[in-house]
Image (cartoon, rainbow, N blue to C red; front, top):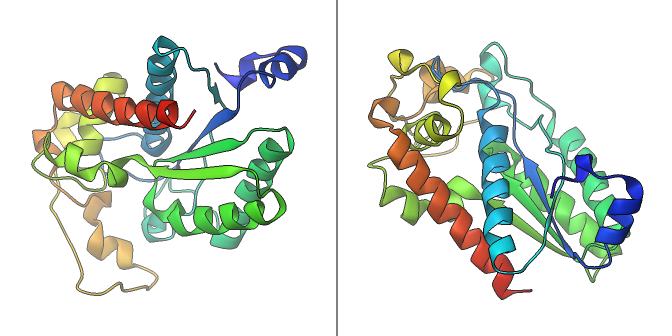
Length: 238
């Protein structure tokens, strides 16, 4: 159930029987020359849709909130189209969103995150909210990271704009994927280096992996296993 499609009386009624809200969170940023800038939002939005569908089959209702499109993306800010929100501002903004849902009475708030740079600010935002709302449980789910073993049983590698993300986008929005431009390589550093243009070194052309082996079938398999496991986690704790 999409929150933005409800009237306020419908929302008020829903709160009486639904205690869980899913907030898809991502980023607008470069994903190589083959994926759209909104990849990190498209993925959690689709996963949330599939989670809700699976839960409905189990007799469990959840609410899906409008997504948070812009995120903290310092590293990829070297590429055009990346809209970076500073860590403090992003944390404060998301904290207020979480706080409002807690004040509305939701006892489980799931931050379904699609972007790695959001991780630390999201943890801090959640921690601050729980001080004022100790009865509220906040889950932070990073879909590509928390289910990495499952994804690597489907893909031979994963990474930013890599085989896994590209496969997922082929399954979700194939018309936006330009596979003729899908190329890249895996880059890493022995320690975390923070400097202004580090993105050019670790993410050449906005990619950190080889996306050329991505397929629709792999994307469907990833979406299926991730949504199934998240749905089971929610249903088992309801």
